[in-house]
Amino acid sequence: MSVALSGCAKLNLTVSGNGDVMQVIQGDVLKCDLPYFDICVANIPYQISSPLTFKLLSHRPMFRCAVIMFQREFAMRLVAQPGDTLYCRLGVNTQLLARVSHLLKVGKNNFRPPPKVDSSVVRIEPRKPQPLVNFKEWDGLVRICFNRKNKTLGSIFRQKSVLSILEKNYKTLQALQLSQNGSIEDKETALDVSALGDTGEDLNMEIDDDDEEMEVEDGETKGSEFKDRVLGVLKQGSFEEKRSSKLTQADFMHLLSLFNKAGIHFS
Ligand SMILES: C[S@@+](CC[C@H](N)C(=O)[O-])C[C@H]1O[C@@H](n2cnc3c(N)ncnc32)[C@H](O)[C@@H]1O
Image (tube, rainbow, N blue to C red):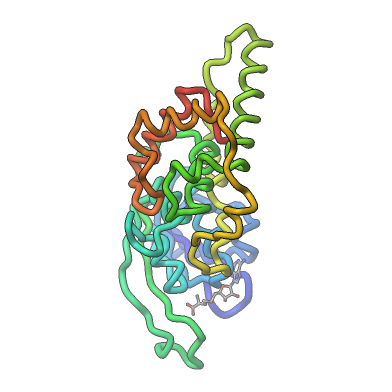
């Protein structure tokens, strides 16, 4: 069974079944419950690119393949690899869940009247099985790392604002463990993929960049036991001088597990 975002009327979702049977569901694809499907083909309104992608990726049972047209820059972000200019949180989170490949460019002049932006068709194939990772923790780490993706991790994790969030999480968990006689070993695995979806990158196509003003405002903390703990984790995995823009999925996974082992959590 396949599903397609259909054309002529607004808010049409077409679901086709086997043989001659075709079911048309009218509604907002972001709000309606999707039926089972194994293939999705869609030419979507670009402003729902990110929520739709993560809605599809959180749908169960998992589909086999989606072929979707996105605005070119969004597509390039989805498929970007470590070291590419457009490597970002959106791509890292999507590639955690799926293999993503660029199929073809569709220039604006293929449309009448031509829109302002170029497009690209992308194939999304969910990873099977899905990675066993707490998505809230994963996204918390990736969010912090890509806030300043060209800074070293050492500099990112020395920021007051970052250390203060992490220390709050650390203390909350410690208190919880004490109150439960140390019986909580780790937080529950969050399997809700939608934790990864609010990337806010559909319309805002700015490339994350270093913002010197923020640095002055935020500043670094003085020495503290907790700061030493955080920097100790970075040293342990030789991450201090590395930059998020070059980290692979495996690097992020390794870094997250080192932090979690040290009792440092991102959600
Ligand atoms: C880019 S057009 C593509 C139309 C057609 N599929 C084609 O390829 O020519 C996107 C279509 O999705 C519809 N649409 C917009 N927002 C939607 C939503 N939230 N849920 C379902 N359909 C939506 C629009 O009305 C429009 O028909």
